[in-house]
Image 1 (tube, rainbow, N blue to C red):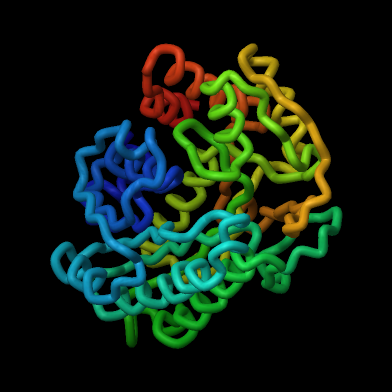
Image 2 (image 1 turned 120 degrees about the vertical axis):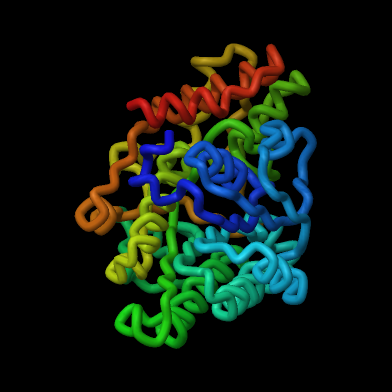
Length: 355
């Protein structure tokens, strides 16, 4: 796997914040497989089981809060990372209604403190801040959002992700300006916005597939609250491939990539929640669902699409797995784990790379 991404990660010291989370654990594994020295900084995993602990990765894992400026600075000072992938966040929409202050504090000020640590660490050459497709001011129109569309957010989570993008853009303009790269500084900063990412090892709260898996384990039907909601579904490895490609270009010193990027599936892979549920039930007979269209007291978007033309054209990035493949491999991961106790993350990563 060391031939991936022009060997740009082999031997590099990479800091991944949020490494104990769903996407962070997959990313850490991939980086290790490419020969990187991976340093993780995150809070303890929230669920039992959790993907990070199941993988038993050979990496430095530091438990800490992204808002702890002193501890974060100490980690940067000790390990001198060359590239930073920032995934640490409060990632749940519905929790953001219950805990708006913590959501804004973690997602916005946590990013500020992370970027400050980067700014004061000369070894850092590249920063990739991961936000969300929910960073856009969602008007629920039928076409996809482009990177230059207005940022916003109805719920606290979405608003915090829009604010995170503004923070990153400010730091890029003020301290990591691409036009000054190689002159007044040697660091490039980009942000990445992905759609609804699915894959094995996610046990997050109030998420569709983890809710289905928990229902299978308990032998009860899962209640699907918004079956008609439309999302851009993609496998976690497709999203991560975009993040890694951006990181590679930044490490190579390509200042044109220091910008915002969408990574999502083709428009044909934008499906309803009900479609995903039915596809999963076809592949896993234990899945039992009850579709009910609730009148939610909490606002959640029903239609959200991304336009990824910029990444397709300028980065030559394309996702490898369509929605059918993504849901089938995700279902396979959970079936293998629940029925046999097997963790097939590495096998699925190898499959992705070989295709």
